[in-house]
Image 1 (spheres, rainbow, N blue to C red):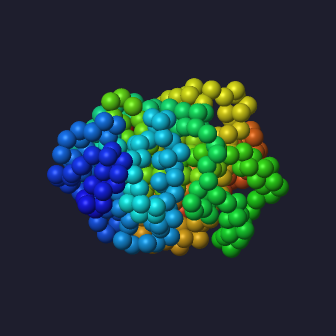
Image 2: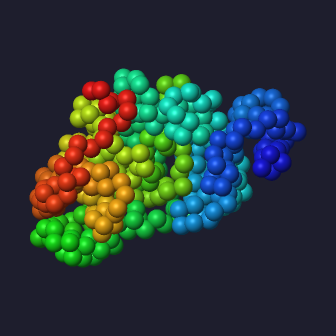
Image 3: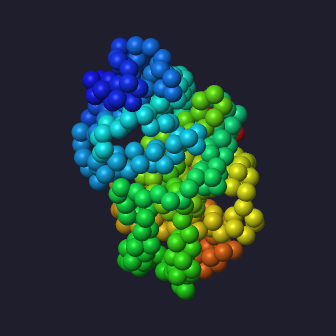
Length: 360
């Protein structure tokens, strides 16, 4: 990695750049990421850079196409200040980008930032609820700036089916609820939801606390392998639900969700009707995506509390967000959540909260 980075940076700067130290930030078997210290500080680069290599395990999520997708996204975001600056790349392989800052020791090692400063995730696993709230609000503001200011003209290197074609999951959802004797959808606004999803812009695609870095009071996004041109609600709904695809899922206090909502809406600068429709579309779509896992959640033998409380909470949040714009969907989501609470003891338990909010 070091020799390739030196070569790429020499081509970029026209100077004899040398790497003098390396600090590994990610698992070499998963996603080799390293902070490389250079022999001196270079204009527009600094003294350290982040190098992200090709994953050794090339699976559906971590393919060369996804890496090329991230490189395209970083180039698309160049000069926006919303992400690290792409310095050099090998298509589908090594990516060299600016360093957002040294890691801050917040939270256990497994949740500290891998590419500089502290992630919002790190704050959520800390002890300071006020700092975590500020981080979440900054994250929401970042999403608003992204959707308001970044050009929508982006072509991804590789599609992600459940994000780029989420309603193709609908047959799976209806079959699953029927087989499991849950309430079936009646006259839901599927055509209207499909039409709304055609309004697209540049989206992050995996807008979760581990992918937002805070440095010098600013929030920036990292890990853009899932970036694509989609409805902005697919990012925005992550703030409201919150974070339906997040591996460390837990709920946030209602006051914090409202603060995030206000921050995103303020940065987006949208009128009431536009904002409510955007959020309703995103939340309804994510509810459909999560329901596509219903068979697995119904039969799973492990982590039932998290899986079932998450699904019920997602459905109830989606019902509240989508009820005015998509009333039939909203009523169905609420009915489903009620039926799941009656059937599953685990779904009646309080969902877990993030560590920093556990005493509130």
